[in-house]
Image (cartoon, rainbow, N blue to C red; front, side, top):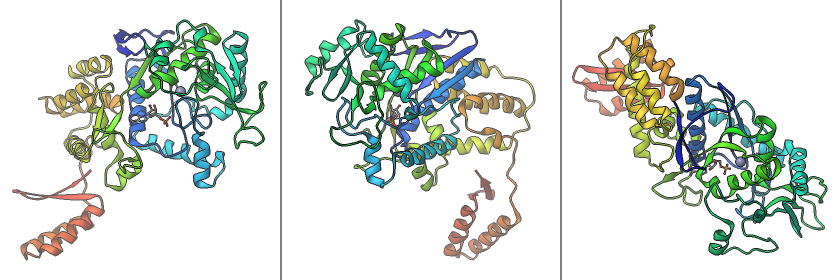
Length: 456
Ligand code: AMP
Ligand code: ZN
């Protein structure tokens, strides 16, 4: 039995798929106007762990992740500028060039973190007709109105509006400091925005209401319906999506199709840096590549993320990352000495899947991994169990299990030379040689039994 926390019902529920043996997941993907940072990647790692856990339980998963390349504004309330246009100005490129460049960078990050690719990555700009069709239907069903800058969704027409965040339109209104403009309710949102009058926009399309572009929330309702059918099983995103983006997706699909878009809504908590927000201006925003430049294997970051439950805030520090590195390297070093996996399983497999099936308890799953590593069992059995566990952990342990380090001759020669320097007490030379060895991917440890050469 799998239990997952559903934001919609505010409780852990037994997961029951709509179609036997199959699960449809829609994950809100990146807005491709900039590099994804490691906070963004935490939310995609969470979706990957969810997907892999379901697969370990025998489900066939169809995963859809959208690529937002239009309509995501800098403000959350239909105000501000399109993030893609900001990027175009910044880089002097076309929208297509920006989208292509950052989509490719994103795909590279996914691969580096060993996140399994989604089955489909639909782009918002490839689905303008589907989005227009949805607005037409919403208009027909009586949920829209027109203002001078666009077509809006009237949230007061949908009695269930606010069910995800538990906040009613009226409550939001009371606490709101925002300018309503021509909106009828503060929670109303744009479905279609008009291009500015007397000038053209860089990304704009013709529509029955005038030239313009779709609101950000629309793409996810239109594309999830196209690729998964509604209702589908699970919708994921970051906690910042709950109050506006997902609330509005639910409203659109409900008003259009008369059904709940997805049965289970799951949200991952934020990654903070020094307990605060990550931002470029604070200089504390890192990408996967930044971590690599500082000498961290991306899988160290994966291990770091696994160490916290997805519904807890996770504070990023380099000390924390260093601790994850030590743990992962220790694991690699240990399993290198194991024998090849042989059929057979340990009881710990059951404990492992039980932890994951309890709302993806990855910290506990990692603790069970270490229990297995230290268990008094033949290493071939441990190897077999660990490979099975790694189907979810995704730490690429198959590259390390039963693969003792072979020290190439040229490295051994450098090590010997360093030994010689140490005997001569030539510490400077010894240091240079140590660095040289490290640059070639090996490192040395001086123990009481002598110098050991290792590789990670
Ligand atoms: P965006 O590219 O801005 O649309 O965001 C992509 C994903 O990253 C969304 O699921 C966000 O909820 C998530 N996200 C943004 N900032 C953070 C953060 N600091 N920690 C975790 N997830 C985040
Ligand atoms: Zn979305």
